[in-house]
Image (tube, rainbow, N blue to C red):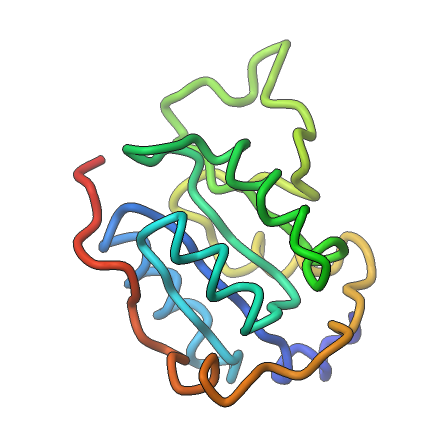
Length: 154
């Protein structure tokens, strides 16, 4: 993706931590991204189908599922098969170990908390496809708001 195209990019952030959702909003907002933040995995899949993000940045630990299962669910949604999925991995979990986390449906992994320069690198690793459909008015109404209730403690 060309750097001047990034301001038209739709980005979804999914994480059970309210602090991480706030941090990611603070990182993306100055660059003009259309954003949707969601705390609950089930709601994230439903809203992603409407919002059709170019990229989804998501944590890997939730109370009711893990991030790899959630990535599989995102990949099954027809409009999201080519969406960039970036896993946000806790630095202290040893995610850079020899066996690592593997691809498991993700395009890229970043340590929590990510730095903006690493986010930009993740978005430029491969060209991001234009989603096949525009977001619905319902999805647009949810832009830039945290959705999904209270996050679980991390």
